[in-house]
Length: 107
Image 1 (tube, helix red, strand yellow):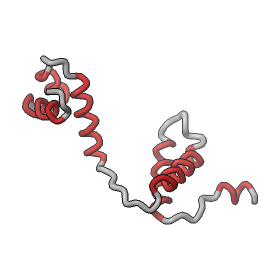
Image 2: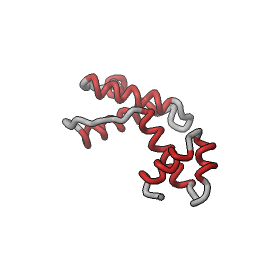
Image 3: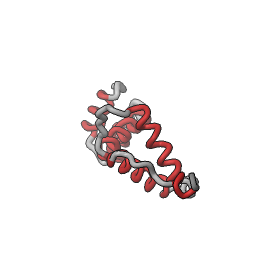
Image 4: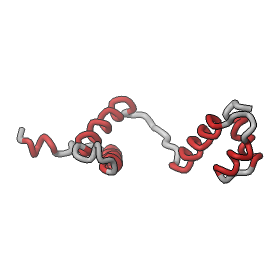
């Protein structure tokens, strides 16, 4: 097998190829992984297929993930008396911060 043939992407189903492209593009954004991003993306995609192959997997939207991370940050930063500061920092109402803290088990 020639190096060119070894480097060609296998004939995967379209969804796996799309996942590989997404991972590769994301890795290219980071200087420390730019050089080997295609190979790393392929390895990650294979690992995902090995672990989750044949399953239906739900991916939350980016907005849902960002909201979840924000809520975790609010819970981490909560000191017991800084609801107003957290509300201002995250552009939320104090009631929204209190609701988040309740759902995060911090109140």
